[in-house]
Image 1: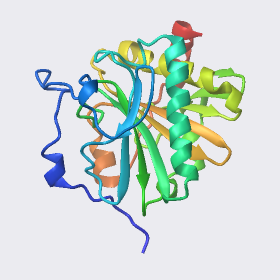
Image 2: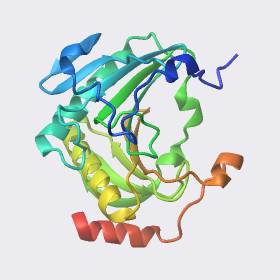
Image 3: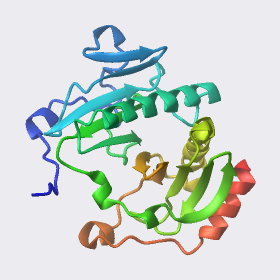
Image 4: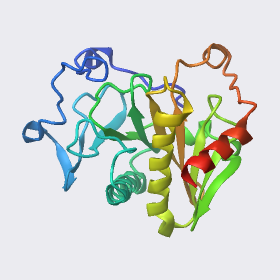
Length: 252
């Protein structure tokens, strides 16, 4: 049978530290001398096994983005976002090409509504033994209004968002454009945290291997719509063109 749900280990989940809301919690990613099961380190970036593997039948890893606990994609230097995306994509592709997993997730949580538990900036690369995430993805998820285009990469605002309202796509068709893809992700993180809504403190990056393309979906996070939770009905805003024009005014 095709697996339809991932199983969450509640016993492990109860042991996880939480520093997104509770800022008094000691940050485990700052204590680099006591990190265990490190897979690779490049400068301040560290790829390691997740100490709290709450998802059963998976291979859970974490990519610590830097040694700055208060850092974020919106604040890094261009050189660092280039290196960070290249490192993350390389390790993601390594797990995909290993043939050990049905599919491999690569994503980032930032902020109290993003689903993360540790404030220190990090991404996650998770191999799924029995679940293929691509079965839940379709081409229209990445359709959108063009915001900007560079060599082999374009940035768009979704016309058919997966969950609802405003979702942004960065679509890479030429691997030479990976540094520019990183810059688009940085712009979108800054846009979401500073211009989308003064109450917006959270976002996610979700990465997809789609045919020959590499796609990142950037999603501002608020309380999720009840229409989506109860009925899987996504909503799309009626002012997409206005949002694109406003974003161009700020960044392009």
